Length: 266
Image: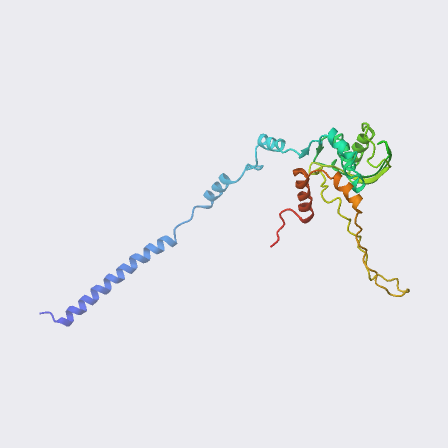
C-alpha cells in the first residue's frame, strides 16, 4: 500500500521531468532560429549583381521629356505699352503743374512704346536721361546720366531720334527734366497721380545742429512749406484731372513696392 508521501514524491518527480522536457524543446526551437544558416557568399554576389544599377542614371528623365520641359520654360516678356492717345497729349500740353508733369509722363510713354517688347535676360535694364525740350516741342538736349543695359540705352536713343512731332510745352518755355526709361518685363509704366499736385512741397530736411567748428553755434529753424497764393491755387485746381482707377492702382503699387510685397511683419 502506497503512502501519501511516496505519491507526492512521484508526482513531483513527474512534474519536474515534464518541465525539463518542455524547456529542452523550447531551447531547441530558439537555437534553431538563432543558428539559421545564411545564404552562401556566392548567392549574395549573384543577388548584388542583379540589383546593381547599370552605367548611367536610369532614374533620369528621358531625353525627349527633358527637352520638352526645357522648351516649355519661356522667359518672361512684356509688350511695349501703347503710345499716348490724342486726348492724353492734349491734356499733357496744357498741364503746367509740377514742372509739366503730364507732358513728362507722356514723353516717357511715347519713347517706351517705340522700344518694342522687353524680354527677361541680359538685355533688360534701365536708362536715365537728362532732357531739354524747346518751347515748340523739339528735343534740344539728351544726356545719359546712367544705364544698366547698353541694349536698353541703344533702343531708347533710337526711339527718341524717331519721335513724331510733339506738341508745344505747356508753359511756352523750355522744359528740362530727368527721366528713367525701364526696359524690363517686370516694370510698369504707371499712370501718375495728380491728386496732390496742388499741395505745397515738403521742405528739404536740413540738420539744424550742423556746425563748422569755428563760427558761433546757432540753431537754424526748419524751413516752412510755401503755399500757393489764391489765384495760383485756383488755376492749379482747375487743371487737375479726375481721379482714375489706374492712377490709384499705380499709387498703391508704388507704395507696396517701397514697403515690400508680402513681407513677414510678425
